[in-house]
Structure formats: C-alpha cells, structure tokens
Amino acid sequence: MSESQGDARPLLLIDVDGPLNPYRARWARRHGYASHRMWPSVWSARHAEGSRTLRRGLRVRLRAADGPRLLALPYTPVWATTWAHEANEMIAPALGIEEPLPVIDWPRLFETDPEGLYWKTRYVVAWAAGRPFAWIDDMVTDLDVRYVAETHGPHALLLRVDPRTGLREAHWERLREWAGTVA
Image (cartoon, rainbow, N blue to C red):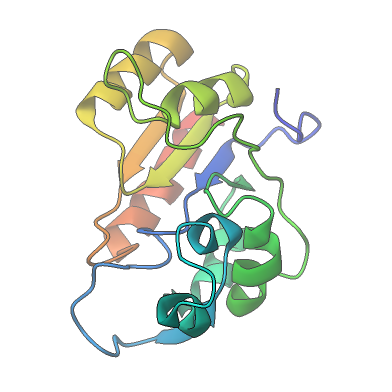
C-alpha cells in the first residue's frame, strides 16, 4: 500500500533513468542539462571493485528545472526507480528537491515476468493499492498498459519516455491534462 494515503492527489511514479536522465542521448551537452558523476549501489554492484568505470562513476544528466516542475504538478511524487532511496540522496539535490519523496521499495530487481510484463509493473499496481497514478518510465510497453487497465482500472496513465530525449514538453502537458480528469 502507498505511503501517502492521506493525500488525495493522484500519485506520480517517477523513474530516473530515461525520463529525468536521458542516458541514451547522443549529445554532449543538451540545453538545460548538467552532467553529474554518481555511484548508485545497484550500478556500482555491477562493476568490478577498483575498475576504472567504478572509479569514474555513472554519468547522469539532469535538468535542474525538472525538480520544480515535478513538484508543481498536482500529484504526490514518488520515486519508482532502481535508485530507490538513493534517489532522495543523489538525484533530488541535483533537481532542487529538498524534502525526501516516498519510494517504492522493490522486493526484487529485474525479475523476469512470466507474462512478459516489465518487471516493475506488478509491483507498481500493488503499491498504488487502487489509488490513481501516472507513471513515467522508459521501459513500459503496450502490454503493461493493458495489464494496468485490466487490473487497476481507468485511473492510471503510463507514459513511456524515450531515453534519448527524456521528458519533453508533451509529457508535461499530458501529465497536467490527465490530472485534471482524475479530480
């Protein structure tokens, strides 16, 4: 069940890599983005101790303006990322988010789903516990959209964000528009 039951706003479930960090972008410096070197534990665990890659850290591109924009939306923001609580420690400060956001604690990471769903999908539906939510992620598919519609009902919006571009103006518009339909 979600941690924010007292808040009547819909949830905004936020993935970091893809939506906020366009990790597949080909440009060195995209307008408004700054590069940061970070060492999230899930990423660090995949690299040999003392390796050059681990010493350098993960390059994360973030746009500081996205923090205030996320907080201004009529949602309760929640981290729905493998960064887990480290999103509050590493990502939030770079975005100017001062207060910790709730976090979905994944029971298992990267588990293969027997029906081909994205590994986060069933956890997201269970965590939302019937509460309306919008979910921004680079890995959701039409299969996930159908599953959520069948199991959670009409009060869910899944927005796939291209990891080459990150959140675009159309995503922000869609999030604002959809929140107005849930109220």
